[in-house]
Length: 288
Image (cartoon, rainbow, N blue to C red; front, side):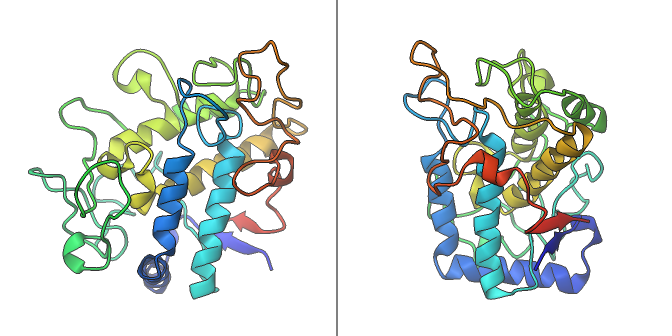
């Protein structure tokens, strides 16, 4: 049965409670930390050797679509009525807006150590201890807007600029690709400040704390953010009918990206599904 992912700002109090409850339960069971470990494992950059499947590569979008489906499956085994809501960061832009309420994700970290002190994922509540991270500390951290080097959340105009690109991705298929929807959405830019990070990437840096780097899954907002990113892929497909995931075929042996990226019909680790199989989600879920 097809289920619906809703805008987080439209969730009822009961829906918020059920989503939070399912998240806390998979954390209690130890399942959640497996998702953190998976993301850390596949957080491979341009400068690293080997295959890049999750970031700085064409498969950024299908990889995270499958990752979201895996998380959603775990949640729905706890409560079959739960799905991952999306956070529209072009509209809900303040530190006090949804999803940063006390009954959902809690708010910003305190100034002294960036520790989140409010909401169900605050360390003081006793249900959300960080065990898989790149740094020490058992409490969830955030630093909205990076006050020392201020950043702003991406605007609708910036997002629309990515959606307007009619080509999915282009060579060299990494963080330096200046054309193509994928990198314009993923957001590897140039320069400093807002220009250095666009769309998806800038949101991670605006939230700050644990949302920086491979262990970003420790912050539950990761999923709401990526549900919105996934929605943009769906909108892009509807806008550019017939446009497909690229590259269709893997780069040849003389190409710098040989065996470093996933072509349309190659399998994505760790699941063994192809980008081609993940382009259509209509039989699984829809967006409200």
